[in-house]
Image 1 (cartoon, rainbow, N blue to C red):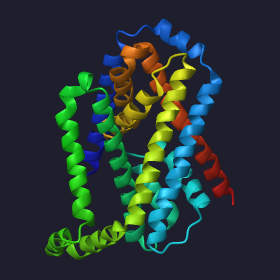
Image 2: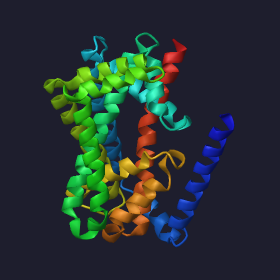
Image 3: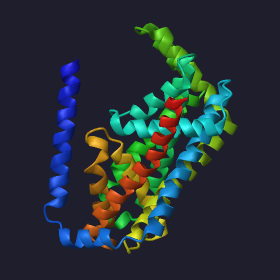
Amino acid sequence: MKWKKILFEIAKILITLILLYLLFRKLNFTELKETFIHIRILYFILGVLMYLFGIFISSFRWNLFLRHLGFNYNTLSLFSHYLKSLFLANFLPSGGLDVARLMFLGKDRIKEKLSSTFMDRVFGFLAINIYVFLGLLYSLKDTGRYATLIIVFLILQLLFFFLLFSKKAAVIFTLLKRLPMGEHLFHIYEILHSFRKKSIITKAILYSFIIQLSYSLDVYFIVLSVRKNIGLLRSILFVPFINFITMIPVTVSGFGLREGGFVFLFKNYIGKEAAIASSLLYYISIFVVSVTGGILLLRFKSK
């Protein structure tokens, strides 16, 4: 099992290097250097603040699920946990953010806490899919060949929502009891199924849209910082797609996938060099936000 993990990590490194090589091999490094030299710092700072705001709203969404389960956490403390987890995720394998979040919540009632982070992810994916679908419609002429794939993903997620929250579909999940560890799996399903209240779903979807909007505004301001402009609407509709592919755990910290997404979606509007620069700055903006979590973590350890 240990060797499988090691081989998987080696494969991720190789895929990352191959993707970066393909993206950088014909790059004008002089132009890329000039782009970084002439960054407008104010716009970059605005981008960082937008990402920080997205994490702040994420804390409200997380607390929405936790409160439903009977936990009484302060949203600011969850915001602190989120930032600390974001910092630790820089050094952990894929999924490390959620593992760290659970760690800061403690070991009691772990199934309920696990379900809260799971639902947090589910609604995040739903918002991303809807943004991607709208982006597809917006640029159907350029992206029509990917329409079927994206629509299938959206339908599958809507089907998952139906199965998760429908009272009629709940009978199907009783079959989980027949599986090994089935009673535990069914108990987790019952917890997830309890989130079907309209008030929870409505608020969670609203929070999710605001979160993705904040991340998109981060990129919008970052592109402005390199003295280019992709347009506000294009940022809002296309950045969630980049966030989605970056989460696919086949490269190190999303490198290669993130840059490829920026180049694919934005090079026709701002050029390849500016697209690569914007991608790297987007990663830096996320890292800068995570550093605040590192500072909080140091304070936490010193107490």
